[in-house]
Image 1 (tube, rainbow, N blue to C red):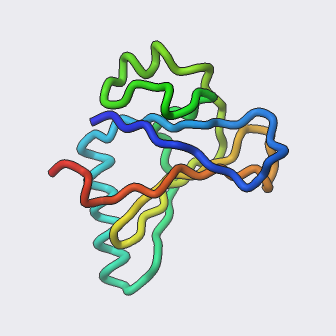
Image 2: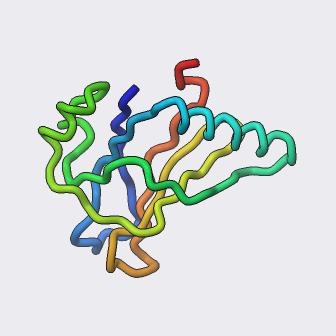
Length: 122
């Protein structure tokens, strides 16, 4: 399952930033998201975060990109944005990705929209 989501930032002065994030939600990543969600629930926490190198950050708007078709996504997506410290954040029922555009500094964090774990196929 290939997924394309919007990317947000609080820094309005960020010149080179991604506007969308595309990721192949394969079984290993979906299983890991479910494992982390279960761990959050088991310890009564709010979120667990870990480094994750999956996905592609693009300068294209999410609405302009084909979803569910990875090959078409890479054919249409504008140039990718190089990212540092890409992190997967998982709560009991949702997850998102965040990162920092390369050479952007600490105030340049971008986040994907939150996604429901229940929407992941079994």
